[in-house]
Length: 231
Image (cartoon, rainbow, N blue to C red; front, side):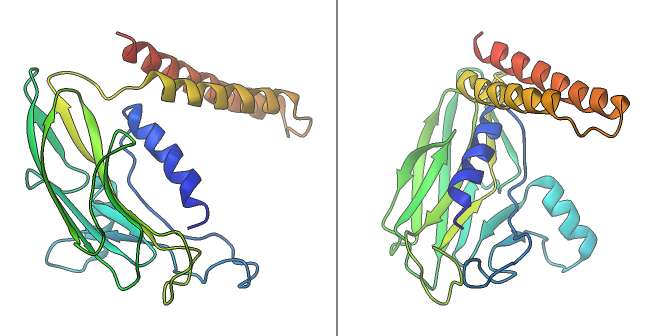
């Protein structure tokens, strides 16, 4: 959870650039249980339908039908669509009906709906529901988030947190784009390109050129996304 404030921000920025990235969570190596949560504290939940099946789980993650959590259970529906799904509106826009649910054994401080990384609706977590009809005039994504601010047992983490995968709402042929977020990634790519260029430890010139070419291709893609946002 302590990293979620940063990693979800990067994820939201990527969603703002039109990349459909499934919400997943987990831990890496556990070096000290005095400073890190136990393995399995941060989890990915996927909607499989009526049957528990490995291939169905893989497909659900691929499709984005997930939410991440270390305790709270969150559920988001928009026009009866679930995370990972797409809603299309005419070029003039339209309205959407949002239904959000929260169930949690531990207290959380915020229960809110995000649209393109901005909070557009919230409610008292104790109520456990948000229902809202919202006009939409530009393409974007929506998630539901619940988050606390301190340790809450039995959640074995720094604070409780959960967020659904994104539901995508497209207006006409508008792509989901954000110039500031595309430029954020361009600066990141420029920085790692500089570091890679100066790095003395390449195993071969072929390897160095291959990696730098990947960075250059990524930069081209984000330049195009930034240009798309400016139209």
